[in-house]
Image (tube, rainbow, N blue to C red):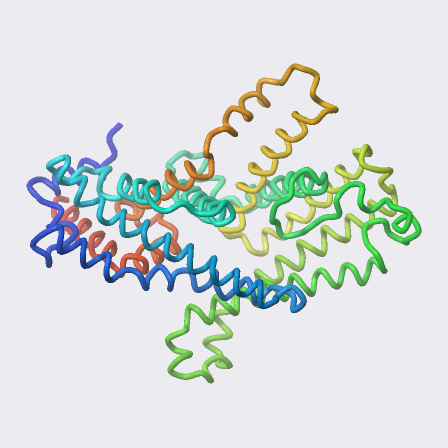
Length: 419
């Protein structure tokens, strides 16, 4: 079935060139490309200012050393430069594809140029590649959910009860994998690894989960993670209103700025950590773990993780939900492969799922996810802006110094004239 936007674009673009769509102010594609390569560099560095500012803010004072700040700044500079090259290659590919095909093509407006720009662009270290790939993939899931016309997806998108229940399941999977010690990845909570809490010193403690009193352990986690949420929201508010704050620094204490700070993220993090730690302590006291071979420890983590996901209803956002979804898949994948290839489980015959995952593991999955997600996001940005994530729209506009915004406006003006 051909989409209506494709039919409209085919009629609207008839007889038009890349100059009409992308650079009416430049007579030649060469002058346009020289201009964009010279002017869009600051946009990428501006886009990643939150990446530069927010992580040091949430770091503990003891962990935020000069060495960390230097390495973090170098990471910021490198990912900003790589994003600049990706954006410039994507914009340059628009004209190249037009001249190769001899006409404006529906899929070559943004999908293939964005995909090729990321594919040809400079390689990223694994940590930064994972960050970019998961960010793109999460935004693609958000756009796909909003765009979908399937009744099941529409119901799931509107049902907060179903969203909360599924997020609770994701949370249980994630914390079970982390508690096993097999998977070592970032998540909202760092649970005690199986086998590290049952030493001689641990058995003499009132609670095997942690040193000290449970009440203090619970309060410490809620205050620390709640403060992290408040700092993140305050940092985002400062970045959103940076122009007004530069003109009037006292606006930082004004009602308008305070109203722009969302307290729900801090409340969600505090409740999430509080429930997980509280339930873990109760279960550990009632049935202490006997060691690494004791599956009860993983059951404790699953139950605590399941209940900890309930506060999602306090802060039901696509960003939190898609992060939980992708992390659950990623960690379950890693856990399954690790357990399936362990000496205890290796008996010469692998299951079908393990074999399939092992074959897929040989592919550059992060790279493929990064390319395909960015291509899809670019396509949605151009033809379905109502479902495109707000952050992605801002990122496209900032990184291209609004070249993509002007293109989108021309494109929709053409299609509106056809209607």
